[in-house]
Length: 271
Length: 198
Image (cartoon, rainbow over all chains, first blue to last red; front, side, top):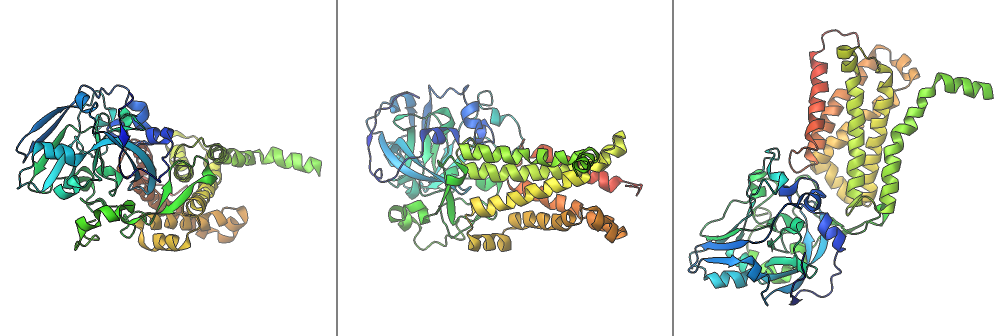
């Protein structure tokens, strides 16, 4: 990871970040393996640069962005966000990135666009987890947002953590961060962003639709079928008996910024 | 008395396997205390104890087919492996209630009444209780023919434990698959068994 030019953005303050060691060695990134330790140990071969990010679909100005240029952007800012995994653990991560809205505005979305589809990378030679057909996951990993969710000021395209470019295991060279949604929405190593007039398929929803919804908003009142989402284990305690569990917040604590997006929706049906 | 203890130890030297079998738990506890279980130590501790329970359960079930297919007779270790499976399952449950849930009884109640994943695990453990309680010679003599019948509970217990284990992962994967294959094989061996001699 190389140092990154970044500046304090909003939403930073108050939260104490999870230790760097845990943020970079406790990862779900199935392209590199199923175990939490696999992404850090199995991602050495992965070459994140050079990289082109495409923004296409229902846009007036399709873009092909050179990510090496993007890494020098003065728009990169630090955002310290809570990260809540659907597996009921949580971290606090100091991201460095650019609001997705800024990038999408540059592509000038067509008025017909209602959704945004994200597509990750397929490189079985560099990503050992893509070799076995075991897990039932179809590659590439795909994710999606509603356009208004994508345009929300909280939604970030992260290019770094802790003031440095993203380590491979965290989704180099760029990934999505949607802090009020479960972590699996944060698709990593994004190659293509497409604007659509319909809801796109998403990887975990395709795999187990009764367990992972399209929205995947953090919601302590809607349990995962196999476990409660009411509380979460706080990562970073290290010692077995020093571990903490804390109540999970509605929209992961970002209700003030995002609750309006879901006004009038039944969040039990649209989980 | 001293002579007696030495005689007993010589005759029952295999009791040494009980503390040996519990070493992984001690090891996990030490690692957990020193912060060597990684970023989410409670989860690793809890899952590892469950996995050891499942391993010993599989060993226990494999002993009969082992003798049938290879002639190697280790049937005397069925009680040892079965009891170790039970001990680990108990510790697994204790870690879940104490460390994971932090003795949050209302969440526990919701879990055991609503979540099939938890219900299956609890069911497997409950089935092991009468087996552990009647694992001694006295119970064996008292129950006679019914003892064998009772101890067939280990098969449904293993099946429930297997589904519980499978559900503890988000997807089928290279960690869980070998264990599930092993479970399938020992259950298959039981079904295909023709003679009733064991």
